[in-house]
Amino acid sequence: MQAVSRTSGPVQSQAAGDPTRAKLLKAAGRAFAERGFYATTIREICMRAGTNVAAVNYHFHDKIGLYTEVLQQSVRAKHFESIRDAFDRSAPPEETLRAVIRMRLQGMRSGTVPDYQFRIMAHELAQPTPVMSRMINKVSRPIYQRFLELVGKIIGLPTDHEKTRMCVHSIMGQIFLYVLAAPVLVRLWPELDMTPAQLDRIADHISDFSLAYLREVRSAHQRMPRVVRGKRR
Image (cartoon, rainbow, N blue to C red; front, top):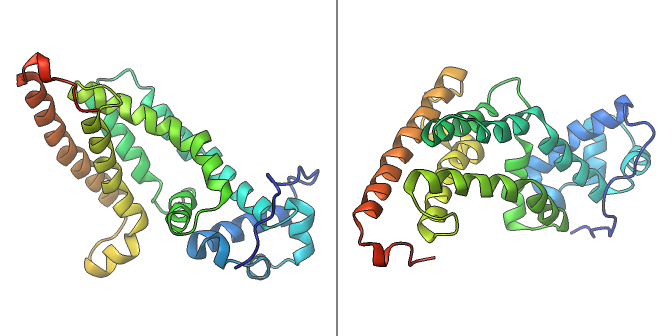
């Protein structure tokens, strides 16, 4: 296992627009998504990018600096901005939920930003790095909080209620299944083709499936005597 440097982030290179830097980021994103931080070597990344090790040192200082920039690049992507924008809709909560689910699945469409962040997250769950904690606090936690607020409005429970969190996690789990396990799903269901039309049908299914349960939770909560509402947190 390679040692993790104490470097907090990438070096601020004056050559930010250098094509070599762009090649390294693209190659590193694919390598880290496939193999994770610890199993990926600088040499492997450089071979994919057609560069030498010195280029990594020049642009990013070291491997963890390169890794940090890959994650920061993914969360700066227009796709993730669109997900955040979907939460800001003035539409009713149920319509907003549909928009958020659809927007997230659109990231899997051919020609869009590679879905590096979620595949890298799978490796992080197995072998955490210091970088991911910072990224979770910066990006994932705010989106997660918005998700809790949205689902809380639909079911009529506080954001910190246990049921609200479990409902959010269930919706996230359905989305992550298609994002993270697509290669397995294609083998189990050979006819599955992640075309834009298919992804829209998947998004509609997840929305319909989830909303049916959320409405039942809301109805059950409304039928519950007031004295016992909101007890479990």
